[in-house]
Length: 631
Ligand code: COA
Ligand code: AMP
Image (cartoon, rainbow, N blue to C red):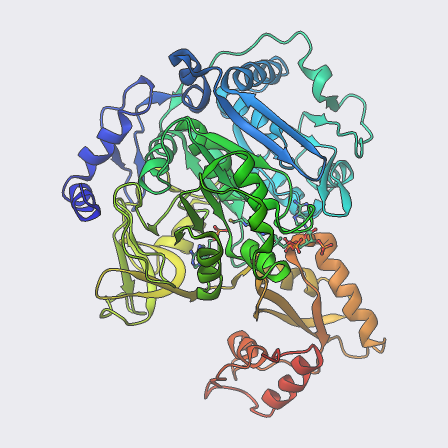
């Protein structure tokens, strides 16, 4: 069937479409129906089914005779390690660790926060939680103790699982002190922690609370899978919103299994047994969906890569991994290719590697600029597919359904709506705009299986952030347009979320940190365009009256504050003390105007501006930071 036929078959019978897809999952009790309308625009999928994620990711493959197939290829240039783990081995490790968690009192529904780098034990920890019905929440290693503490207080975990350190090119990042600091800062205290000690930097253990990974599992009975309801949360993943409080995206078990399984062939075009590689991090949604869950559920071999596109050791790493492990489909963020291109513009290093097994490259996480797409296409000779989605959806909203039918690529567009998503472009009043016109991108409710039904602990925030602006629709937070062929074009965020090197960050959260500096009276953080990372945060701070210290000192303190409180991943390095900020007469800071000045794009000064002379002042201020950049 063609894409158009499949899309139509979903549209004319969504219930039948998803019930058929649900047949490919092993349920202990089959759901009686797919969609559950809970009122108030809240929908759930496969709610009365009973199922276990770990069973579907591991046990069923072993039972079907695939125990010897490699499940995970751990390739770690930062430690010089390569290791293959079969489905049978991963199952044994996971069942044992799950048994140890149970022995220590972890029950179905308990939360477990995981703060770990890209090592096999992280996959074991995640699947072990799923095995016993515990809800994991993985926190990205580039976040600082304060961010971890915020997530601990929201998720209220019974247990935390961490590694003693992560390894960045050229430096070891000790996680254990960050874990200790976060537990100290948080109001909620976990009952216990399990720490995987890495030889690069073992952590100091706290007696009575911290357990060593190995000792913790000694003598533990392997745990069986605990069936949970289809609407039971598989995990919570925090993502950036407009304020400093991150949003806890809830991923329900049943829909997640069905959707993950569907995407592996339809979008990524791999068959069971083939090797799939998503070069991201388990701390992000791409890592949850496409390093861990989808490949394993679909019985693909997944590559767990602990390294960077460059510097570990050089720009040939991507080509080496693709070649050595015979990767079929490769998924990364455009910024990763920009990093490779910057070091090896002609891809000379590719010549040493045979990437003939590779069928296609997939990009997501941020806008894929045409230069990067064309470069990747030209040097590899492979098709490059952009696709657009979010932490909230967990899988592609718009993409190229290559496993069904490869649609013609229009460079700059992530292609078309996937079955399950009815995309509309709306104006401010919620009216559909004509093809080719910019508007807010919204998805008609209900969202498909695998997407978020709510935010953890925050049902009102869920309604307010996503459902209230356009009744009957999910508001994506992205603006864009659809052309006459139904191709989508993503232009910008409509909120204060920015995207730095494929990492989603909140300028509001950075402003909260800056505002906490004793000398700062008010501030603005905006995202400015950057050729390499896509965007960078830029902070402009006004000082409290009477503060007389050197500005450079305060600027350096502000930079350090954001690094210490949010983390290095914020990449906050541009900060300037200014006399005043452009504002409307009612006192609203004109952040978009500031960003336009820094980007050197057309500056539309609103008529409501309080004092237009501040614009020239702002030009001088951003120019002192080197913006706009000379092309
Ligand atoms: N633990 C600790 N620190 C981390 C970290 C982690 N897991 N990840 C990043 N950091 C640190 C970096 O070391 C860097 O520190 P520095 O300021 O001391 O140099 C800082 O956070 C900023 O990191 P980043 O913005 O990632 O810049 P980079 O120069 O280290 O790497 C890329 C740039 C493009 C190589 C890298 O961002 C990348 O591979 N991006 C792909 C993004 C991705 O996977 N997105 C998910 C969606 S697909
Ligand atoms: P995250 O939740 O971290 O996956 O970030 C989601 C956001 O990243 C989206 O709402 C977009 O703003 C942006 N994004 C992701 N993929 C794309 C893409 N292919 N093109 C443009 N923007 C994207």
